[in-house]
Image (cartoon, rainbow, N blue to C red):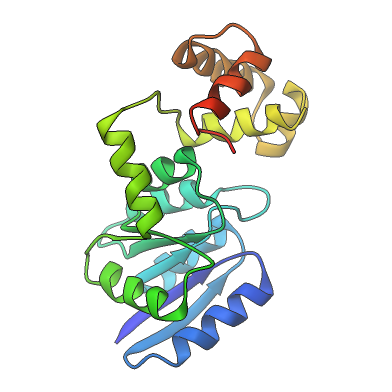
Length: 206
């Protein structure tokens, strides 16, 4: 029996996943989480075999951060990312955090179930488009920003000030500035506008 924890902040998505997984022999949903923090806590409490993790879980801990925390535990469950987002930064952030697979939410049920079984067995489970993107990055490596740096830059791209970024991510303004310094250095730019433009050109931001 594959015991699955579903982590997604949208009730309709959770209900749909529960319905799809409920049709599969040998698969059982043991719990649902709506935030990254809740996903980490339930993963520790319920000891699932697999966590189906969205990358955007409202405020607080991101899906990538939750994945890293889940995978850092003793005898951790595997993590299969299931999301709408497929930028290089999202994909790399999830894989670097320890995700065994990365699937998009428009995947057909059969593909989802196959990915669940593969990931729960410790195998790689990547959507074809995602696998192609990762292969392209390996063949032509580009600058890789950390998940938190991408979070900061994404908010900057939306027009947020340093104080607004700090409030949204529950960090200090000084930490925001430090992240931006690292981003500028990695992207070889000197301004917020240039950083956003370079990140979009490289596929780090949508």
